[in-house]
Length: 166
Image (tube, rainbow, N blue to C red; front, side, top):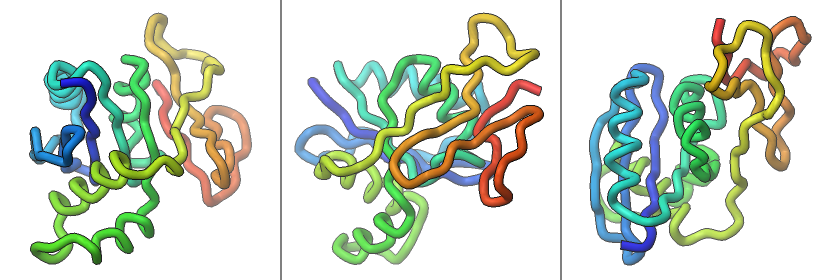
């Protein structure tokens, strides 16, 4: 298969992952613990499903930090589908009321169909104390979202560090 889209409904303790092929057919849908080993295993499995995989999340930081770090570590493309977009698009899908699985499917499908979504990209700056060989991802930059910082820098109250190795 050439391409697959992965929608991830981000949560604190677990995420829900939904993978679609080019035609919108479900390839995978499952609950995913917010744990490095579990996420890494799922990423590897998903990358084996298609030559190109596009990932999409509904949160640009916070609970998604570990997930984003592991995806960027593998040079994966990650799109941001805002929660309001997911909410509004969900109204057009048939089926059960709001669930994590349904939201993940909507996120994947929106990433598959839309070309106007912002791409999340890691910051390239290093943080003192970070481990060699592993990127330190503390910043997400895309249209309309402020830069987040960690360490000794003062960040606005509305922003939180995306990822740090402390």
